[in-house]
Image 1 (cartoon, helix red, strand yellow):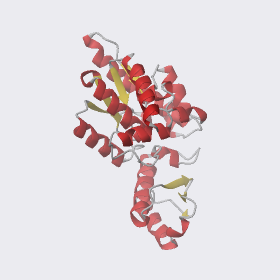
Image 2 (tube, one colour):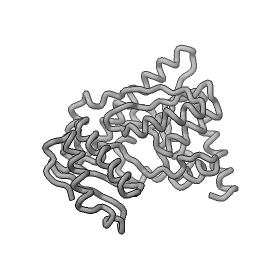
Image 3 (cartoon, helix red, strand yellow):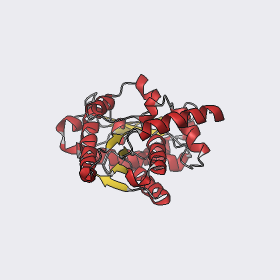
Image 4 (cartoon, helix red, strand yellow):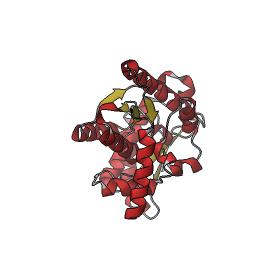
Length: 261
């Protein structure tokens, strides 16, 4: 991002944020939501709440990251439980699973917003969705629209690349975090979402990253089988012995897993 473009983007983004000076930022722990929380807090620290959902679908490392960044930057952080696992529609893992997940999340953030509203002003829920997300199938955005969630990066026409560049220019060490969709995204549609399966996925992926040094790995579960995905050209680092180790580790949480490939 050029200096001139960054200046223009920041000016537009600041104007969007200032329209809602009292805000609750949904922060998953990825670079998008971390940067939004960073900027919103910097502009109005007393009227910015950063909310992070603690859930089996959220890697513990993401929760730890949010807590550490919040402590470092002085955020007003609230950990919430969005209770999507109480919803059988979510657990059945349909194609629009994200709609049910986000509906529960935004309902909880509406509660946080309402609790802060006793002072008088309206508090607005904001997400870190960016312009690139609009070109994908994102049922979660439907839930956001229903809950009147604001997407400042979308309104400022910021892409993922813009967000990473801005985070880098601000000296944030998390500017190059790999994309990390929620753990439930690793389960094939129709494979029921359980806390045990998600924990197995997280442990399997952590093992692969530790053994190979790869930044992006996926352990996807389809029924009782595991499919490992890595970047093109990196498959040779995932040896049969390593696959066997990963399956053994994942079976500690899901004993019925049959195979890994």
